[in-house]
Structure formats: structure tokens, C-alpha cells
Image (cartoon, rainbow, N blue to C red; front, side):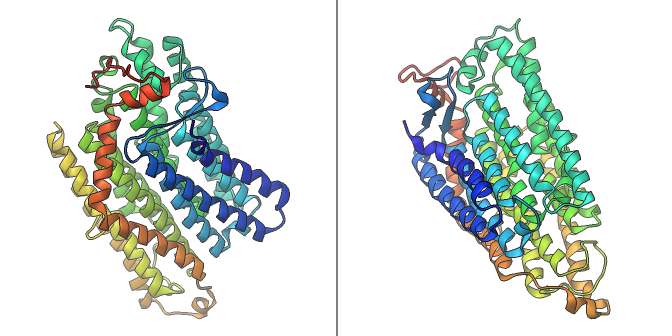
Length: 513
């Protein structure tokens, strides 16, 4: 049994209480331990991703209790890729928090940051639906503490709204788990895949209700219309490093949909026939349209970025909702891109906030550090809008290509291309107001009083741009990797056999030939 797979969960779970108990009054020590912890997470995650690249599935049984009775952690290509993406993102977010001083503006930032990583890593690695719920709750508690970091009435109101929406999701999740357990007697995902396939056509009511409830829960996490209302205010009011880390949290919802609806409730399963294409794809298209219209209509830069995250999640969900290997491969490529681009834009918005009186999209004196901040903003805008030469353009091409065989191909192409045009106009409008029209305003002494962002803040943002550039340069290799991953997601028999310890007895109940 490989114990390393538990390290991404255990390491932040140990570092967080240590920071609280031994270094709560020493911000320098907190920073050192937090950075070292994240670097160790990157090393472990890279090792796990390398190990799973050839299709190896790693299983860890807590207390040596075998599935489906014990708690299991499972590392395959999808989960280890998401763990690595989270760890790498966390490093640059943490560097920005340290450079900008955000971590010192409230109490327990680094401890909460580590608990947040624990929840995210656990959600990606768990092989059990109930423990997915548990890690969702860890995420909720830690993220609320991070959201209200540094205080403020607006931040507190947004935090309360964020918690209420997610508590609704948690309640629905419990109802779904209760229905699933009543119908099948298990919550282990691999075991569920076998048992759901055995449900007869006249006994599907309970499991269909559970499948719909689960989809609603994951759609809330992924901010899919009409369950997206919590995101704009929550992300816009959160501290910039927190909002940047939250860029991976919407992907937790997307990950859960991919995992559950390719293994437990796949498209060909009669029990949930029609659930994928009749609801999810139209909702994804509307999410993409509303997100990019919000970019055009936004009056503040932070809300513009928040709506762009909704739009990017709409693009991800359009590709996922095709539920084909090509669509899933495109979605996985775009998930990496949109996570890095969204996080980068939140940090750039904070650079603007540092050198400007506010984030209102109105002409004001030039931003402190105007030239470099402007260059970073336009790079981030190009990435999020999907313009060449960055990976957003390639990701959209992959999504459009994957949609060619869909019955709604015309709607998909029109929505994707139209939303791209609207987002280009929205980002161009914001950039011209912030950095070009600023020179038409008479500069006052206030400009000289605004501090320039710290060098480490620029390093963190530049690091994310470098990752996006690498994602573009190695697009062929990355897409080949995600194509292989997608094929394995639609043939989950090895995953099921590994978890249930049934080598040589791969289930063919689902037609995995």
C-alpha cells in the first residue's frame, strides 16, 4: 500500500495546527512553514502524477480496512493532475500574499490556508461520496475564514451569502447521500458503479432523484447558471490571494461531475438517461453567455474578473456536458488554463487596487507602476478572452472541435464565438479605462501617494503567466495526456477493480470492453 497518496492531506493537516499553536504571533515563522509545506506538496504531487501517468491507480486504505467498508484514497491520472495543479497554484498565491502583506492583515491566514489545501486535496483524492461531503465541509469552513480575512462589512456580507448558498448545497448533498445509501447500501464510488448498474428499470425512482440532487450540488460548487448567484460578490469581496485560490474551488465541482457521471452515472446508463444532455449542456451554454455579458457590464474590475470565472466555468461545463472522450479531453485541458488565468486576473486586480484609489471602471489618475501592471493585465485579458497565442485560444479550438458531432453544434459554436467576442470587448473597455484614459485625467499628488506593488507580487503574477506560456508551448503533449486520461475515465473497470481488490474480475456490467 502506497502511503504517499495520503501526504497531500496529512501534511497541511499537521502544518496548520502547528502554526496556530507554536507560531501564532510570529508571522515570519508562519510564512516559512507555509511555503515549505507547499513546496513539499508540489514535490509529492509531482511524484504521484508521474506514477499515474502510465495508468497506474494508487490505493490507500485507511486503517487497512478494505473497500467498500473502509475509507479509501485513490490516485489516478485525473485526481493526481488536479492535486498537482492545486499545489502549484497555491505556491504562487502564497508568494503573492506574502509579498503584498495580505497575510498580515488578519489572524490565522496561513493556518486557514493550509486547512483549505487539506480540503481541496481530500476532495480530489477520496474514493467515497460521504468523505467527498466531509472534505466539502472542510473547504466551506476554511474558505469562510479566509473570505472574511482582514474584516470589513462588505466582506462579511459576501461571506454570509457564500456560506448560506453552500449550506444549501450541503443539505442537498446529505439528502442525495441518504437516497443513494437507501437504494444501494454503499457510498464507495467504485462499489456504487457496480450496484447502480444492477438496478432494474422499474426501480429507478430513488436513484434518479439522488443523481439529480448530486448534479445540483456539484453545479452549485461549479457556479453553473442558475446556481451561480453566490460567486460574483463572494469572489469580488474576498482578499485577492483568497479569490485567486478560489479559482480552483469551482473546479472541484467540475471534477466531481466528471468523476461521478463517468463512473457511477455514465451517459449510457438507462437509470439516468437524459440527465446529461437535457439539462447540463443548456445550463452550461447560458453560464458561458451570462458570464461574458457580466464582463461587458461590470462597473468594477474585481466583479469583471468574477464574471469571467463564471464564463470560463461555462466553457468547461460545455465541454464536459458533451460526455465524449474528445469533449472530456478538451475540458481537462481548459480546466488547467482557466484556473491559472482566473487566479492571475484576481492578483492583477489587486495590483491595480494597490496603485489606484479604487477598482471602479472610471477614468482616474494613472495606476502606480502603470506600465508593468498594464502589460500583465493585457496578458491576462488575452488569456481569459481566448485570443491567440495563449492557451485559452487553443482550449476553445479543442472545445469547438469536440462539439462537431453534437446535436447542438450550431448553438455551441454560436455561443462560444459570440461570448468570446463579448469578452474581448469587455476586457478592452476595462483596460482602456484603467490604463489609457487615465492619462487624460489630470494627475494630482494622490498619484504619487499611492504605493507601488511589491516586487514579490509581480514575481507571483509573472510565475502564473510563465505557467500559461508553458501550457501553450506544450499544448500537444498536454492534450495527448488529457486524451489518454479521458479514455480511461470512460473505461473505469481498472479503477473499480483496484479499489474493490478484484484483479482479473473487471466488471463488464457497464460494457467496458
